[in-house]
Length: 409
Image (cartoon, rainbow, N blue to C red; front, side):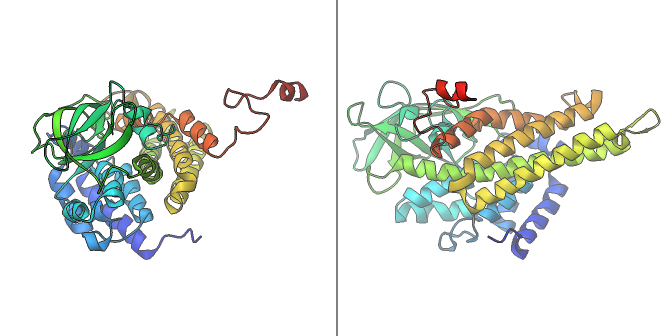
């Protein structure tokens, strides 16, 4: 493995950083999140047309750039550093890979070029607040309980009157960018309880009847959430038939999503750290800059090491998402939480005001852990997948030693 970035990756980082420095200052972020879409639509179109951002990891045959997950992680790190409000994660990380993996040739040809061009945004809608479980980050998605399990609740699907059509009924309450996405990928249960199976469906909210979308008030305005109600809504099955391994595809996509979210969290942690370092150089106390005090230096040095370690983990996960996705996300979210807490503390009384930019980063840290974590569940699930709790010494409680082991210790 060559850990050095290529010239192309460095150019992606440089170009994106310069563009976001010009158009994504804290005041620009606050203005963007208060628009109807929740992001700066002209800036998003420019990122799509000039840099090919949403199609960075899509094949060239579908209008994409043809790069890999690492290049998209580089872009995610820079968007995280600037806290760019955009549908990048929802469209390029959640929806597009599932369409590419499960869609028919006709569906891929119709949808992926529009996504790559920035003409169409998309997102994944799963029932309840179960996105992390559906993606296999904090639990096993294969039993389908997170999608309703064929019982009451969740989103239920039944064949429609027309050939190949389906009807959906249910609710998803935490859909990333769900209020503005032009295409919804809805996870639903079909077959009832005896023959229950999880399927993915395409819903075009602007054309289908019975779709109610409400933007929710969220802790982190840069990552807007929506509640989506489906009331006997017409939908199209994603894929050729209903035998596809949807939960397996979701779990596979979840590892890549974890790597990209980790890179974005590392970018946000770096942004918070950089702003804190600049502040302690100018803030004076007792006639000298507070950054000259040894205690402050030690705190920032420890934080720098933690952020760099998380960055290394994130890029290893981008290189091999199946091996390190969940753990890299846990490490990155922990580094982001620590970095933003230190940023608020070291900015003193100024940092404790909601109007200060430090709280933009602090809210991102708290909201990401609520939506994709928490950290201890990410690590617990990764440990269970690795078999760390298996064997004769294990008990029914994760991480608890057998009585004989406790006596021996």
